[in-house]
Image 1: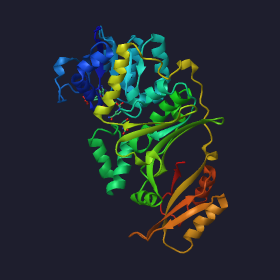
Image 2 (image 1 turned 135 degrees about the vertical axis):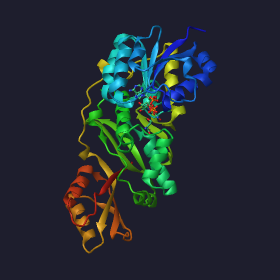
Image 3 (image 1 turned 180 degrees about the horizontal axis):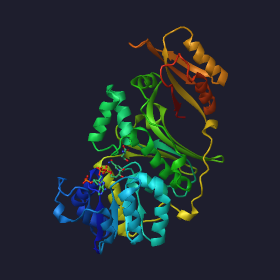
Image 4 (image 1 turned 30 degrees about the horizontal axis):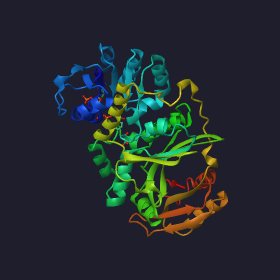
Length: 429
Ligand code: NDP
Ligand code: HSE
């Protein structure tokens, strides 16, 4: 058995606590697999007095996370504080500059600073590992970076946010309302410290930009990910989708073509014969389409203490074995600049939902806007008026360019017939 891998751990919340517990429970097995023990020697968090369910006296405590980079004998620092900048970034930069390995679950930091950190890790000859940053416990980073390394990836897409999937599938199964289910996701430790990152699609966009980089060999381009969340999705949309043989899922989709790189997070209608329609709760699932391997599906727990700790500790085991590889599967300098594509040219079937006043001529006005923009209607459903007198109209279009649907919605902007913003969702093909 070799010398222990000595680890300093910043952040003892949901994930950090899970890492301490996992390393304790599976200590001997991990040592056998890694060829050496993995020992946490120092920790940092905000509040020394908080009860975390384990004995803190075993570790050297530091109030200042940055101090972890200066401890003699530490081989690897694990950053589980969170936040794109601030103490997490200071710690990450300091760790690599000090010639230590870095493991992080922080997709926000990677989406904004991943390229810089990867270059720094390469210069130092140290690891930058982040399996937990995308899809929690699901080994999709390793799967793409190593297992699918021989393939040109044509498209990568999937359910990347456990909180949103938990909310959508609970609303669908139980009819509970949005706020109530969000509170449960927070209590279970799935949600980000600012849950608007989850429900507005930003967390999934962070993850998509990381996946796209690895899949396509492009520089992380979070700024060109279109991010939309699930706030506008009503229980009535979920019921309407079900009546159409679909389920609503928040998907991140990245696709490379001759025109450039398309990256978008948006709620979609997913047909029931697609595996993603059956992914429920906080489970994540990522589909990658390779030119030789075909369709790969990575699926499992996308959030929570145990699954996320599993991914963090797997990274530490790789480091203990001396097998860490390049963060983005190729040298940072070899990653190319991604050219964002014009999404208006994308062709899809779409679901459109309008809340309208219950009066003569409203449907004709919507239909005229569709006709004038060249959008072909495949089906139209109108439900009985609600107590407030509004009626929901759901339209499914034939396949056509997104820019035509956008033009139809633009024609209806400001119409006195509409109560609130229409909702547009692509239908996954
Ligand atoms: P928590 O909020 O549960 O934990 C954050 C930890 O960081 C706490 O221990 C907190 O200290 C500590 N902390 C916060 N600010 C500071 C600071 N300024 N200085 C020192 N310590 C600080 O977050 P999670 O464990 O949920 O998430 C951690 C990271 O993992 C994030 O990047 C998140 O996006 C990512 N992640 C989370 C997943 C999940 O399911 N929760 C899944 C995948 C990734 P204290 O406890 O004293 O308040
Ligand atoms: N808030 C994130 C989610 C945690 O719900 O998916 C896992 O990255």
